[in-house]
Length: 156
Image 1 (cartoon, rainbow, N blue to C red):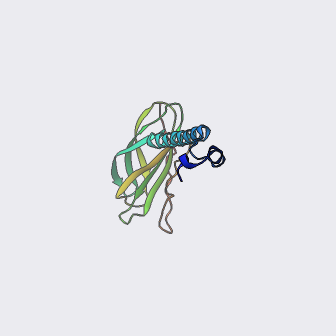
Image 2: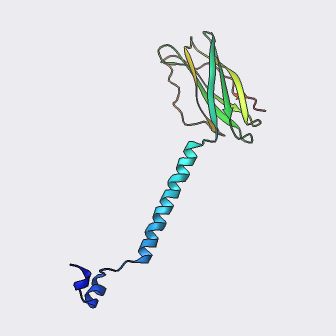
Image 3: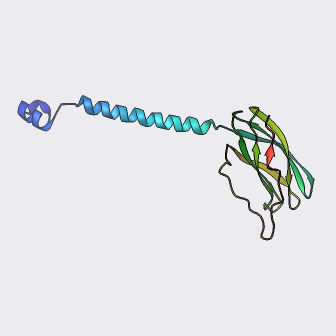
């Protein structure tokens, strides 16, 4: 029923033709806050505090693979990186959680990753500021242990 046919008392009672500016302002504010939160989350995910890139790996022997990687970070904080070497069967043969001491913003390092058998691939699983990143835990075959690893890299 169009509002022109209602009496003024009926239109006032049922709110026909009346828009609430307060409600509209609340809706606009809620949408703006929601979009701001989505923008901040997207920006934080797109720009991590630490960026690590595997440059190359060289299989030295059945007991070692040299992993060359670079890290771009905040120079004030220590950085923790996780490296992994795997066999042809995709089982872990070497796994290291390495702390890079504070110092330079750009660090390139060749890390001697000890392995329990021949590695066919190596990778940098990730790096975190001050604590290990959330990455997959080691997946060694039953009866196999991780060899002793070097715990730190000088970042200065």
